[in-house]
View 1 (cartoon, rainbow, N blue to C red):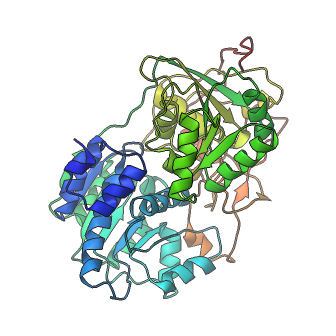
View 2: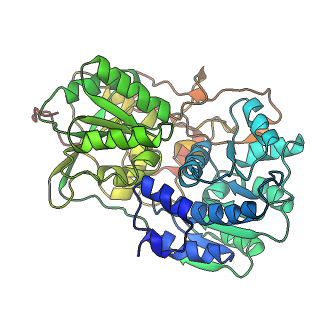
View 3: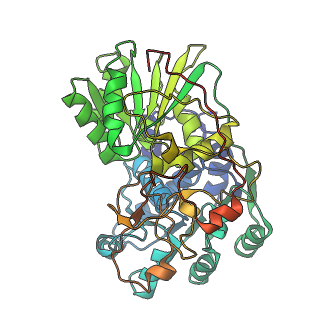
Length: 489
């Protein structure tokens, strides 16, 4: 099946083609026709299965149909997408921007931990689609900036994580403010009793879709992990890319700004590099991709959204400049090398803030990524030792950065352990996958910034909070293979 077989309108097909999409994933094949027929949907699917496109594409098409009938109608929120973390909210917002670039629709994302000023301005300008985390949404609703009376499509994403993170009561409050007549889309990776009960109360005769994500890596891909301080990543990347044996490298950065910064640093070091992300014009993206495919550019730096659909023959290296917060994304990233029987190499940088992400990656792929124990910028392993993933976990990970509690209090931040050092609130780095709780935020001063964890040089591993100590079953006796003898690294 192709996207052209799904009865999609031409502007959406054009946007998908520009993203490099031709074949829908299993959940997209199943969900898009159901949603275009305006049925409720219960989806048991994890991130990494293509579920964002599965709901974004049909919602955009249905909204466009309505606006085409009355293009001058005032813009009111017709779609509400509720998600547990700000990083996931940002990713969903970027997906709507990509798939809806040729449609006259407006969307915005709101979340806590940052000033509400720009978010309020976007709301006042009028929206068709609002992506939000629960706490900030309730806060702005209570201030009178958000009305949900016109919502036609309600998406509850990662419902099990909402439960794990203590947001279920906030979610119920939001639901009471929604119109009874609406189309509801409910997604959850797992279905514990409380989540199933919530689904039963808000869905009406739903269609059910269940898919499993890719979880294995190809044997043709040689993986290696570098423990490195965040501030040394640039120097390590330059050091690695100075090896001319690396014919082509696709480097993944977590944000658009981060991708541009990496390119700038590489160019200063005399390494040909270009960036591809959503802020680039379509012509600029196509030109960068063409240069990379023809080997005019040796290094392409991309965000996950922009990299979707990139298919480069004989790509020798994938480099994770920053580890993804979603473990399935790691599998998708490195799967761009080692294709068609060719060998590929996947190198990943892990700083002290990202060790929890690495644990989730190990759990997903069922093995540990070998570590390069000797390189010029090695991070003290005592500051970044990673425990093996626990044998079992109840629901989603209790150790994910965006699910932790600090000192028995709720935190605005998502990080492996606690410190009081402040950092930039818009940087979705390893320490910024936001676990958003505005029930505290509403009662505190606005503009509070998330905290950045600082490693404790004297400890064998990052200090763990009481909740993590109770829930984690990992041990600290990890051992890794030594890649230091390979000069390519």
